[in-house]
Length: 272
Image (cartoon, rainbow, N blue to C red; front, side):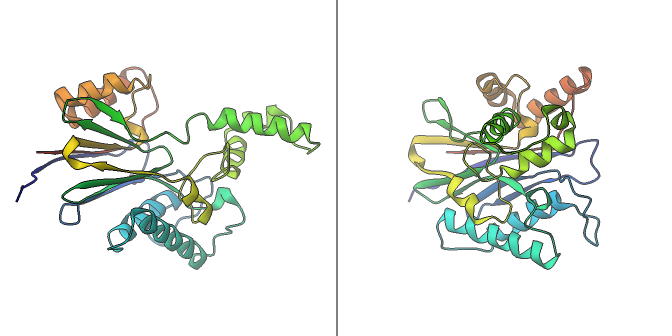
């Protein structure tokens, strides 16, 4: 019987501007389940009795639900977690008719057995894999990237159809822009995210890898993305220096250039 050894590096770094890290992660070697979640910073002022906003709640509710659902497909597992999120919002009397009020989270996860690696992703969390020959493959797509431009184009199309919308100057206000962007959640030419809406599942990106062909999987939230989105350079850096050192260098770069810092969470799984 072949014994698979896992070497796991996990990092999580809270943004200095946040009280609580809105990212969350799951690492369960016995289940072969690993996941990262990035709660979307809410527009609304809602907090629960513990002071947690919708981003914190969404990432925790979905994350904890993932490890409670066994013996189902990865898609079914995520669907049930998304349903639980919807139910929790109803309990807290969230107006789910307003998409900007919804608690939402991005997700990247893998579930491994002796022979296969099942993966799934939604939103802007990313998954990369390295083959036995040392080649890196991008297994996911940032579904949030470019949403502001897609939203602007959507408004242009709406105006052509005769719908009355405020002028574009109105959407230069960040809050107004975000509210409109979130109205496009889980729609074609919008973006995908887990927010309790069953429609989210149709945008889930998933697949299966043969484990014997790979030697590592990397999961990360968007706070770890390189500013130039040069995945190749990022992966080379992580491969040579590890995930922690990469994140440390990125934070130093952000601080030196007075750039916004987001929560950072990553899981690097290497197996042999």
